[in-house]
Image 1 (cartoon, helix red, strand yellow):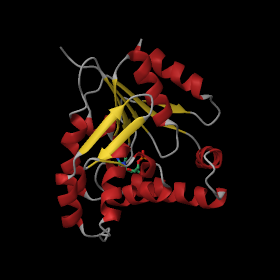
Image 2 (cartoon, protein in one colour):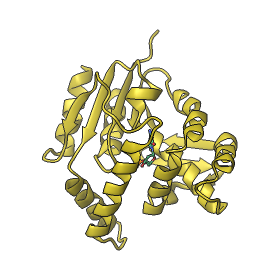
Image 3 (cartoon, rainbow, N blue to C red):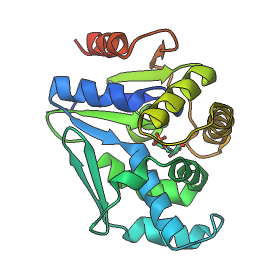
Length: 218
Ligand code: DC
């Protein structure tokens, strides 16, 4: 039996995580947060104080790291038996993940770990290259985006709500840098799959995006 896959790709801060989790829950499907795999590797690399240019050492960690995901109401991630959930969301983790994700061999090594999430009764896969590289045969593909200003504003609000000091101008610069790096890299850049539905969520509520995506499946 073919396992249905819905891919949701898009730039950082477009709301992919919230939408994907809600859709997966509604459908009773599995959920792959592929960014958290690159983020976990970033945490391991930062912990070992490796140079971000040392591709060989980074690939070795990518090969040997043991990752466990508990996909309950909140995603809990353990790296080599240590809970790294709180570090996953840090700005530095995301920016470092974006840098090491540009290394072709890193992407190659992490490919199978992502494919393994495809299990019955179905999968919602969230990332940058889910519909183009990891699950090119997925029946349903979405490209979810929003203007850089809107994405920066949302991120700023999230941080302030968590009691973390934040600077909107700085966040905007970081989001634009990340967009550039993720879109311009040679291997598996952020790109719209030919058969993806394009959703610009700049002026939409999360609920209406979720409804539109669910509509696509039904
Ligand atoms: O979605 P995210 O912000 O958690 O992803 C963090 C970084 O990981 C992102 O800036 C680029 C990289 N990434 C990737 O290259 N490919 C993916 N499928 C998911 C994330």
